[in-house]
Length: 347
Image 1: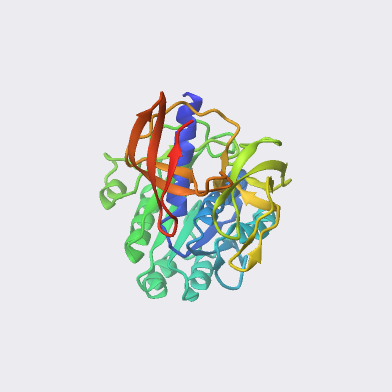
Image 2 (image 1 turned 90 degrees about the vertical axis):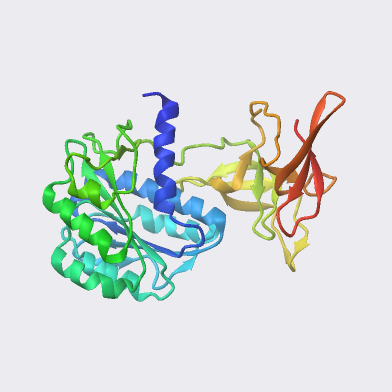
C-alpha cells in the first residue's frame, strides 16, 4: 500500500466524523477498558476533526466520555473556533480508560442540551443494558441523529448480536453507522482493506454482503505540516482574511496548533486591533514556501486571491474566466460574498 493511498484512507474518515456543515455536534467517546489499546489514535482523530471543524466557524461542539461514569468537557455546547478547541486539547489528552459502559447516561446528558443537533458516538462494544438504551433513545433524541462509529478488531466482522444492536441503534434515531477496524498492533491500522461506508440495513442483516470497513493509519493525523520558519498564508481571527506570516512555534503537545508571526501588525477591524502573533490551527494555513505543481486555472476553481493591490490581505474567490497575456496566465476572480472584485495571476 503506497503512502498516497494511506493518506486517502485517513482523509476519508475525518469528514465522516466531522459531520454536516453548520451542525452542532456532541462527540461521545467510549472510554471503557476495551478501547485502551486504541485510545491514543482515537484522541488524534478527535483532535484533527475539531481542528477542521474550527476552521469552519459555523457550529457548536461538546465532548463527553463514558465508562462507569460520564465526564463532559463543558456543561453546555460552545462555539467551535480555534481558541476554544485549543482550550479543549489538554482535556482530550487527559482522557483515560476505566471499567463500565454506561452509554445511556452519556446519551441522556448529551441530548439534554437543546443546542445539540447530532451525536457522534465512537464505541468499541455493546453498552451496559443495551435494551434500556434502545428503548429510551427515540424519546431522548427527539428526531436528532446518533451517528455511530464502531471500533472492530481486525480479525473479524461484528457478530450477529452486535450487528442486530447496531441496526436497531441506527433505526432508533435514523442516524448512520460506520465500522472502523483497528489493527492487531494496538493502533487504528496501517493499511486500508476497503473503505468506510454507511452501513445500510441490508449490510447489517445479510452476511453475504459484509460490513465494509477501513483500517486507519496509526501515525498522527496532524503531523508537522508546517516546519518552523515556514512562510504561510494564515487566517487572522479579527476579520477572517488570510495574511502572510512565518511559523515561529509548534505548540508542544497540541497537534496541528502553531504560533504565526504576521509580517505586518493588523489594523483595527471591526473595532478590534489584531495582534501580530496569533495561535493558528493547521486547517487555517496555506504553505506559501512550497512551489506547488503548475496548474492552469480554469473557470470554477476555488482560490485564495489578493484583496488589495499591496498583496497583504487574501480572501477566497472563484475563477470566472482566464486569459493568456505575454506568456503569463491570468484569471478573473469573483470573490465570495462581502469581498470586492479583483484579479489574480497564477505564478
